[in-house]
Image 1 (cartoon, one colour):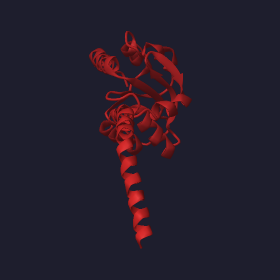
Image 2: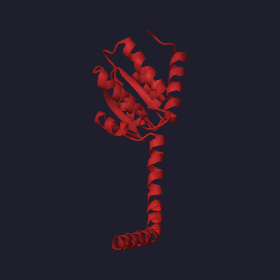
Image 3: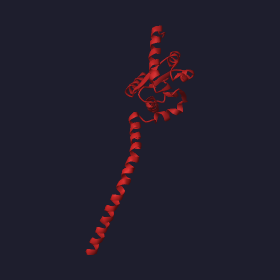
Image 4: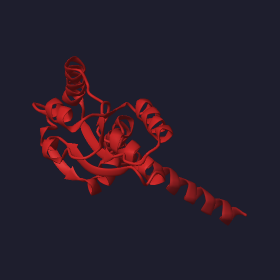
Length: 177
């Protein structure tokens, strides 16, 4: 079915705007997925802050030119579904990877992060990246560890004195009894 020029321009502008602000992208072949499964995938993507779109490859090539995803242009072949992570780098990879576990018709073709085109096998690494909250939590625990260790070190002489006095008291109580 032919798409009007205005519609093509709107699609390219929309995808280009998303690609300009996205952290990462995942391309997967969706051949053989039912409409029900695609709707389910789109719903999961919306909930996860991922922009999911099936775009003609020629339009996708135009949309990603001039963005950090320009490296994807040569790999855009066949029926592809593009997923752009809007909020965090690993979001699209997690959603596509989890969906592909239960739906063998969805096949990851490549991943793109920071201007680099990565093979499909790297989706595992990208999916394991922590979320924003997890990263902040890890950072706080790393910052807190030396401080808590320092406080324990400062408190140790007093604690040792208290334990020594308690041991002497217990020893004297045993001698009296």
